[in-house]
Length: 342
Image 1 (cartoon, rainbow, N blue to C red):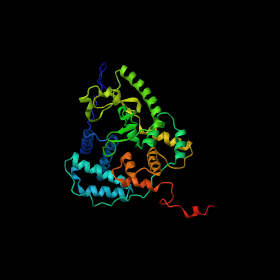
Image 2 (image 1 turned 90 degrees about the horizontal axis):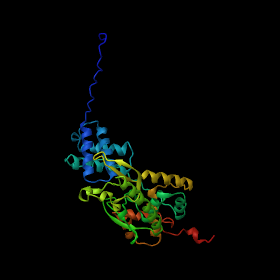
Image 3 (image 1 turned 90 degrees about the vertical axis):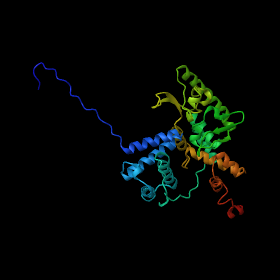
């Protein structure tokens, strides 16, 4: 205790020093490269996830100390112990190749001595026309409109949510997806049924955008740093999202408030709940509607190459899988039982 009347000074706590490990530095470097090269948000998150899992798996702080043998061991463990799908293992492999080639500048020589995960021979889930109608009756508002584009245009969910106003051509009845899967643009049809609801939706969205502008907001993130080249593009109506989110987010780099597009989980949850209300026994997701887009076109006799182009498949073999789910029996062969007439 101090002397009587003495004023005690509060103890000064030492500042905590945050120590960044080489692993943290590697992940941060990878994040910067992914953003600089304009990788999709989901791809960026996936690659960073696999890079971190790889480093944690080997309990080593510096990725430069890990080479081909360690990469092979990690990928093999995913197949043997974790029983991941082939696509998951391929995704992890791509992330690690990106790490060593694009981030560390130390390309790996061989990443082939691994146990490959086996691709399950499963057919895509497809909804019948009656099931799609039942599902749509249970959907409302924006989720319904999004799902109409998935089924009517053959879009992937992220492609639909990444649409900008300028990507919709009502006169030509076309939808253009920019830098879709494989970083390719493609054009697909705009369903006649969706034209009027989509126009009404965009009028409402435009009113919200006008109010945002009046408050000094109204910005959306642009690809390829176009906001540097075109100063006002991020506020222009043509660059706004077709399906904007209800709120804003603040960019941690520049502190600017932007409006992002609708979160995929909103549509996913809506489809799940609608399937339960419609009593659809099949495991249906938004992507199921894309599968269901291809089958009626094949049934109608459209050329498979045309369907391949509309879906944006790099290989026609991917499109050919839909020929196995047509409502024609085993392989388009009529069952002998149907010939009895009983």
